[in-house]
Amino acid sequence: MVPGATIYHERADMTDAPRQVESDGDRVERLASKPILIVGAPRSGTTWVQRLLLGDPRCCGSQESHFFVTFGRVLGDFDDKAGRARPHGLACYWKRADLVAELRRLWGRSVGTLIERSPAAEILVEKTPDHACWLDVIDEILPSARIVHVVRDSRAVCASLLHASRQPWGGPWAPSTAGAAAAKWREHVEAAERSGARLGSERFMRLHQEDLHEDPPREMGRLWRFAGLEVEPARLSAIADAAAKPGGPAFEMTGELEGAAGPEPDGFARGGAPNRWRRELGPWQRWVIWRETAAAMRRLGYDRSGRARGGVTETTE
Image (cartoon, rainbow, N blue to C red; front, side):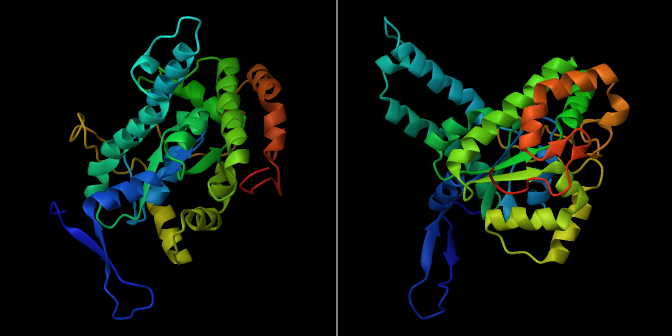
């Protein structure tokens, strides 16, 4: 896009009234302030959901930012040190509201170049699974952000996490025991659902990986409606077929790693088969995972056999 260019939006009534003009900066601010953020326990299918949305040219996005994990800790440190018997830290230099406003501006700067390079985009899509644990911080910094919580059977997630722990790309972060993997699933899912109950159905959507795998057009239709995008069913099927191909295109990056990104590493995308965990987990591992996650699983429409028919598919409980 040429710097200083403007984007014109025709009035809906098609009268001769002057057309509204939106500057580059206004457009960046608009898209950055109301993104769709995809969250969930790692290995739940969040990358798949992001790639589905990015198959629509009206959406733009890039690799995981971890923005709200990084700067949520800054706000947490601010609050902690400001409340101590001997207060110190950033509260000695910043008003909290000013710091939040500065983080909002920094978010806009972080995604601004990506938005500018995507002139057809109407929605910014960002996927960081760990943001599931920071939705309260997200709500404070971006009070119009919309959240898609991708949920998957805890046993399937744990099997995938254990696989990831044995890979060069997953070793630094993926838990290597069934108990630790189950605890990670529960932490992310319960944190997201607590915040989702407060955010409400206009800003929080739950999407079950198994339902999406079983009937992509139906669940994608729900997702596109949540995003406020009209689309023909045939187009959704084409997007789903393209996203199902192995690998997928590399994300465009605009920062220090610009031009350095390739496709996801081998083994990162495993196809999302719902019942693979039955072959990959031993009886003891299954027992450990079910003990840790059974209560949350049942609330979310799962039983010992997997995703229950007629299970919960609404946006909130």
